[in-house]
Amino acid sequence: MTHIVCVHCNAVNRIPDEQDAATGKCGKCGAALFDGQPADLPATSLERQIARSDIPVLVDVWAPWCGPCRVMGPQFAAAAERAEPAMRFVKLNSDDNQDWSARAGIRGIPTMILFAGGKEKGRVSGAMSSGDILAWARNLTGG
Image 1 (cartoon, rainbow, N blue to C red):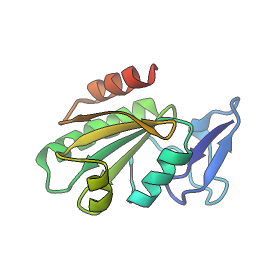
Image 2: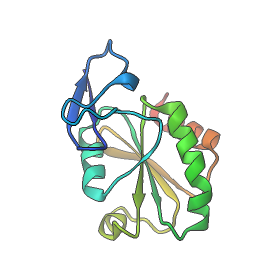
Image 3: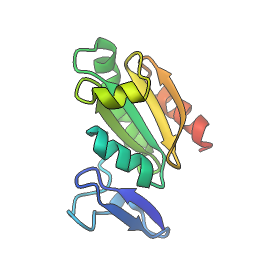
Image 4: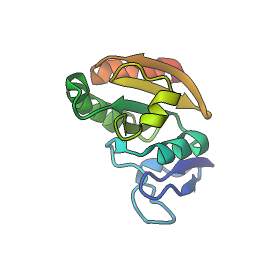
């Protein structure tokens, strides 16, 4: 079984290993568990993703006023389309989640942080292409 947290309602879903998670639906709200697009989450939902998901969670910490963040946004989305459901892609607006950003030690944006098994595996700052995002994340997860 693989535990996947729904980005819509935060319910933890158990997906049998023989089932394709890409076609999975949330048992609580009925939404698709993956749609190939990063979800923009508040800090409380992000914390649940990190703590309860069995798949790696890649977080893009960004802000709407940040030029490099706006440039990287489509690249992050393209990476999500290629890598889900093996990895969850989420965005966290640092302006709306200043406490979480401060606790995480965010000093510049965009910053990506990869979590696996509830722990931070690595972080990188600066805009990247979708290929570079995937290569960096896969290097950290061994996939």
